[in-house]
Length: 210
Image (tube, rainbow, N blue to C red):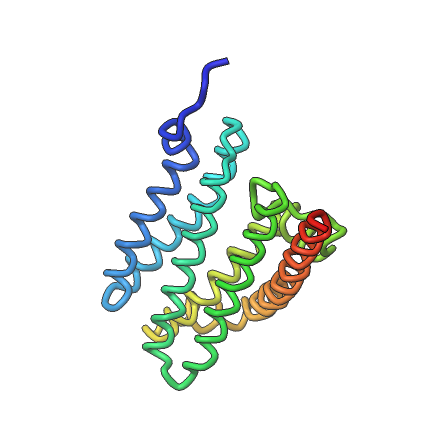
């Protein structure tokens, strides 16, 4: 069996898709202020590629720790950047935007770190012993895709509402709110379980030393 180099990992197909998502996100930042249509299109492309890179990883057996982190970090940066801009156009709710960014980043970082510390290669590998809700959320790909998609639609709809889009903006905000709330509850549970899991890992490691 030929050895695999770090260069090979970096050039895996799902990781190449991830690089395209990074470029798309950067272009998105420049469009956000004055070009809502381009912003919507680019955000949609990034979301589609997010689903496709996981499919490519499974198809070509190219799931990696690097790819899992790249995927999660790109998701968090794109979502957080959009929420930051919501703080610009809806400044009266700045505390809410700060809380949402903090919850999103903290819950996903701790979740990822706790699973990788346990030997998992992906933040989506969750079993029912940790949380039935998170297991459903992460292991049922249809549920995961739907919740993530609608959650992003909620933030994008708030953005489009500011630019006077009625159906894609105002109406979509109201329709997507229940799923958005579910996602925030899942983030809280994810944060709590990750904290407990890390504490358990620390306890086990300290117990082995004594």
